[in-house]
Image 1 (cartoon, rainbow, N blue to C red):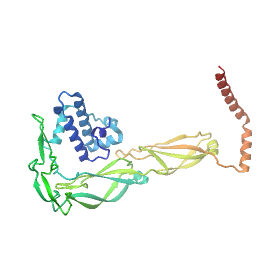
Image 2 (image 1 turned 180 degrees about the vertical axis):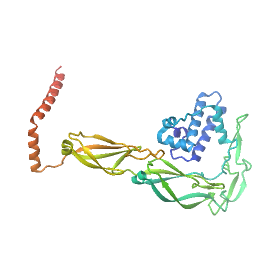
Image 3 (image 1 turned 45 degrees about the vertical axis):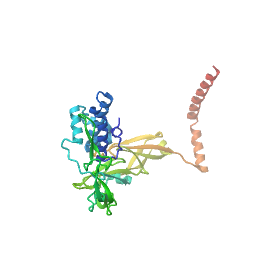
Image 4 (image 1 turned 120 degrees about the vertical axis):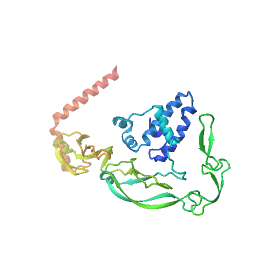
Length: 359
């Protein structure tokens, strides 16, 4: 069960997009519109559970990072008490919640920021030039140079549908909630109701961010009559040529020449804190993994560092000159007893397999 799938939004959805998706689904599955329908009731609970998490910045960050288990590990339990659910429902659809004025765009804005691996690892300060929407100063956001009152809703922007207790105000389909019909478009914004502004902002990106993580910049989103919404930076981190990343842990593959693997050696490996000398013990096997605690990436929330895992890959020469071949042949001959022992094990296995076919 994924909260984003439940609401039908992407993982990069803004608060406004999440709220819109919730409104639509809550209206559809509200118990008053589905009396006696247990399936709709359960769906309504899940929709509200998802909204409780994704509308809360702190809970959403934990959920994005660690999933539902991460929330439960911090003591969060979804509340399915209907009185509380209806409180959330009333907050969105009325009951004292103060809406921003109708706008031709969302106040919150999300942009993707591409980072080099080392920028994500160590953190970085960046100056960004962003674009944002602002209400057209000439038409005040209407998009109209001249207009008439909508005959369908009589200028209200909404129509009432339903019967009895469950009567719902819906956006007028004729004027799309504006309350008027445009006769002639505004020549400043070409009927859009907004203009595009640019601004340079300075952001400090913390160490340890990863692809898909979000960072909120307060009051740097699109602009309405009451101020600006929030800007969300969605990170996309380029892969490293040196390290592989798994959460806060790093993996580095270390080539070890076959003679070093047999005889033992000391070699240097890269870490985020510089080079580190490690000891290769004699007769080290291929794919041996060494663990170095605390040499991984810092968690953006706790600062706790992951581990570095060094995987030792035994490397063999691709070519041999005459002298090297002769030396290896002499070495090979010196292990006659060991070679015979391994050959006898193989021969015994082959004979056993042959006996299976004779049966």
